[in-house]
Length: 332
Ligand code: TYM
Image 1: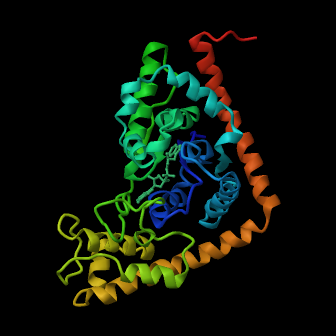
Image 2 (image 1 turned 90 degrees about the horizontal axis):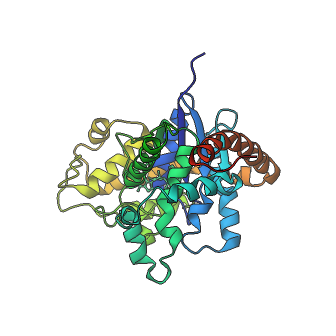
Image 3 (image 1 turned 90 degrees about the vertical axis):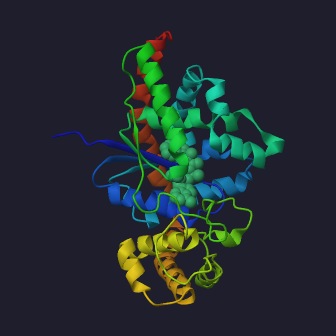
């Protein structure tokens, strides 16, 4: 039997996830799980590069797993695990640090953004974040990494580091490819459609959180920024707000952008925004309900994480052993 290609992705268990995370990441994972050998991590080691409240981080870790499951990721098909449960991530990160240049890390857009936002805590972890992400991906001999567009630079640096290592030694790592979706690789803020919708946005009214209730969702969409025109048309250059809403509507209803435009031909922005809000609220409600149900069964969730960590470690340790051998670490 032909071996399936490997797919790897992860999300940090921080703050509240937004529909950007759902659309840019988890939704695609559920569609891809039948075609790839999938690893989905909960990136708690990345999360601590910004201060976290320990009890919250613990709680959000389980809640992230419950979300993966509630969105339909199947633990029989996919390996879901917590990053810190597989020590090979930290170990490979340390090795790769010696194959990464400080200048490369200083140039990373997300590092620059986060340094500006957390000027009081520009720690080494924040800077090293892309190297840990490279370790995540490379440990599994990953073929594809489905992510949103904001992670493009990080996947590229993972490829560079892998290539560099392979050139110095012999081919050791598979060179991964990023996978972006045609629709929804970048969902923007509802109040400032020039910015991505973010878990940590200053104004929470610009983001739809996966935990928002129906009324909140509809209220936020009603207030979404559009433009002075009146036509519901996809034109990201000139109609950033409307185009973002069309993208969200299209993803949540399964309609194409053209079908979405047709739904609102001759209608005003008010009707349009309400319809988008309702489509999102309708889809989120059952996910929220299922997530809550799953969270009540801690022993089931821990079982999934335990077997996930075991399977992940099995694969990761094979790559790590190869790396240790090549770089000359003495083996007993
Ligand atoms: P994180 O936790 O910030 O985001 C998780 C995923 O959600 C996508 N995303 C979006 N997509 C579309 N529109 C948006 N507004 C939006 N906001 C977020 C992100 O692109 C991402 O795919 N460093 C990663 C986590 C990570 C990882 C990895 C990913 C750690 N190791 C290895 C892939 C492979 C991160 O912070 O994502």
